Image 1 (cartoon, rainbow, N blue to C red):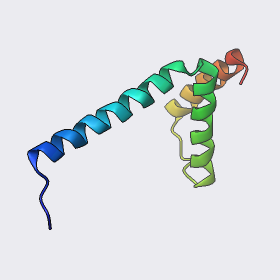
Image 2 (cartoon, rainbow, N blue to C red; image 1 turned 180 degrees about the horizontal axis):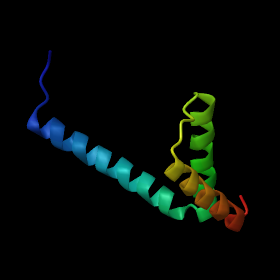
Image 3 (cartoon, rainbow, N blue to C red; image 1 turned 90 degrees about the vertical axis):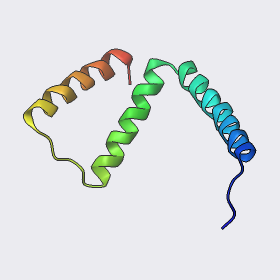
Image 4 (cartoon, rainbow, N blue to C red; image 1 turned 90 degrees about the horizontal axis):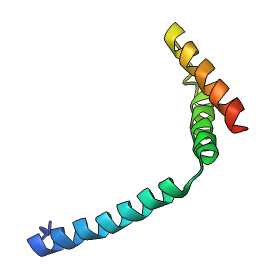
Length: 74
């Protein structure tokens, strides 16, 4: 196995820093409704995978999310 040099490691970190800055900026440009839609997609994915167990507190949280979705028009 070939080891990475310090210079290669530095360049690797720099490249990922650029990628992270781009994705962070991309997220900041999204509207609240886009972010809520993405979260809803993740929720639906979880349901499709059978990950639906909720406690009483979670029901309260989801009621709040549903209200936020109503307000955002999503």
